[in-house]
Amino acid sequence: MLFNLNAPIALAYQPDAYALSDNGERLAVLDSNAGRLRLFDALSGKIMWEKQLEEPVLQKAAALALSPRGLALYLETGQGVSVLNADDGTSLREYHGLHPRQIALADSPGGTILAAYTDGTDSQNSSTSLNFHNASAGSELARVDKVIRTF
Image (cartoon, rainbow, N blue to C red):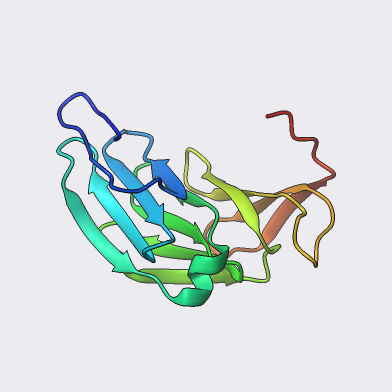
């Protein structure tokens, strides 16, 4: 169960990934067993929308991030990153060619840079890296290889 100051959000499952907007108003929750991505109004606990995901996404999805104002939702798909409209769940764009298996995503406070952490556990990438991308175009801005994870 996730809590906020006004109402609890009861989940009947352990989320595979979740993201909270910086302003605390939106909560995205991924349940890959059910193939479901939900966006909650974190203040009321009500579901704003629910999206059934395709099988290939479910097997590889590992990371979610909400943009600072909660307007866009980033979902790692195993093929890249899908950017969804957080108001209704519709697709805004796809970033392909990013390193496979992002395990953490974060958007910059201004919403212009997407950071992606890759753990290096897939067959195509044997080292960890931290990659910074232009959030509008998806192009890589910088990359730090062999990141040492301390958590």
